[in-house]
Image (cartoon, rainbow, N blue to C red):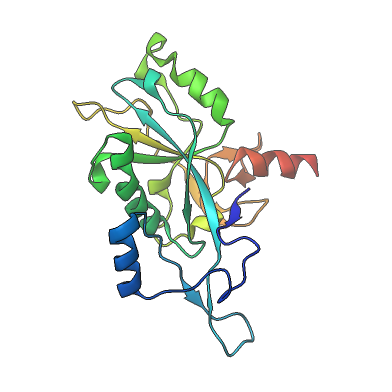
Length: 214
């Protein structure tokens, strides 16, 4: 599921409370934890503000180019649906130390996986049997999206590709991908897939299958 409720079936003021920064620091000092900013927003046609309770689940796979057989299984983080891709990069920089990496933003790549995670992980474990120069990622690099693209428009697992000690990556980075409206979901995004006529383009294999099945 793409949306998760972090405060499920709980009543504000009775079973959970919204606290200020000073209170959070006091609790963090005593119990530890991870700060995830909740956005305040105003519902449509309302005169009051609410605190965001629903977070988007983002599945991550870490792929080290140095040793792709050590690719991790899916691990989840949660983020605001109001986050942009820029915010996602910043959040991933915060969680990378949990995987043993401390990297700057321009020292790793983010990919949107367009196939089943288990299939991708199994392929990575045999990647040394092929010529890395010929490998094409089964998805699209997030650097092709605008930095202010909302992450709620990004569907699928995110792969964090960690470069080798020499700075090399396993997968080719395509720069020739058309960026326009997907013919199915109508989101403006990179469109790596097209039909045989090369006049209809899709942002993902999911949209392609749904469009052709209609």
